[in-house]
Image 1: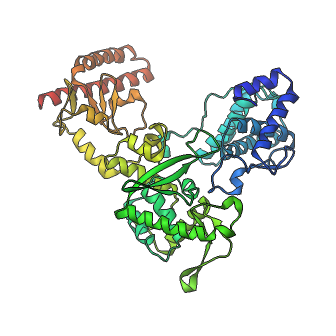
Image 2 (image 1 turned 180 degrees about the vertical axis):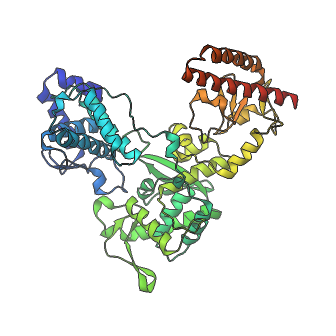
Image 3 (image 1 turned 180 degrees about the horizontal axis):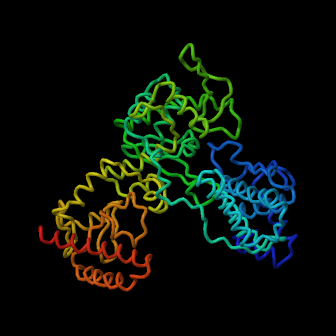
Length: 514
């Protein structure tokens, strides 16, 4: 079996092709009990997965792939599977590759794959660029194509084309759209609704597990019946992790300690009640669905009676079902935003709220990592942190004072509430040291590269480096003169000149006001 994609390509090219293909096909045997290589779809029922995923997220389809490319696509899929790539990622990749194959077949009138070069790839980029698709969709399509060529390069007529960038990449900061953070007025309404015992127990349990702990709904739906254990004066809840488990089949177990008081007790009581419900249904459920916490009889809502009645087919709650029910319940109970408009929520938005709210409440990033099981702080600070406008305005009022701007001087921050706590400021999730030149006091909504920090109002300059900034002013003044006949270079020099002048002015004012 191949240990990595690079090794796989070289082995396929340099050694016996049939032997390598045979080894790859064993990957499918290990991941599926229902599918053969020649099938039009592969049901990967033995792949690493969680209970929440539907059958469609465990199946690779080849019906949309042009016939002449099906074999190549299957080899590509096997190579990705041998790398422990998630099935949902491979599904997305295949869709992107299919888009490119369709382009060759239809728009390029059957242009041969082995003749594809950088010129064709550039033309395809222009084709995608003109399509009326969302930026993230274009990004996903391109990711699939680049993955295919990088993995399959040199195999059976696939040309060597190295993709080093994605022209449709959406900057991380632009992905933090406001809709991922639920406003407090909506949460207050939802909290009241989901304490209503008319809402089926399984939905209430799932809601509060997502609301009170930064969980993914896929993790919640995969919790086992024996998920609560006593520990000293607390209760420990065990939650399986699939996304952060390194690609292994077995989930990594995350344990959350809860005190039996307040909302902690409320959640524990809900889980205990759900455990009893689930246990009562175990004798009548399919073997592969046994022992899950959120086992239930899917309720049916009777509109004229305004209540739920239990269905007949026992199952385990899934992500798609819960997300659909959130929308239904919001509409049924009249949950609206601050402007009175209907809301469109998903369960994952509660995770964004849980992380952002805790950071603003004073939790450290390392504390959040222990709750979410992230392996580094990058995902938390780049994708899950949302700026609260009122909090940002409070910070800005302190940093942007015209009369007494904050500057760093001799290890202190002048005009700060506590000038001696530089280290404490740097320990905040939104602060960052910029070399010896100063501190950015808030990176929470910053789309800039590091060299742009000096122009930012949130930059707290190091007054000890005033000579450096004054020298920069002189150098940029010289460059303005030097590039007087080069409009672009002159414009850039003028920009940097004004940036450094502003910093010198800020430092001198800050020191003078001490």
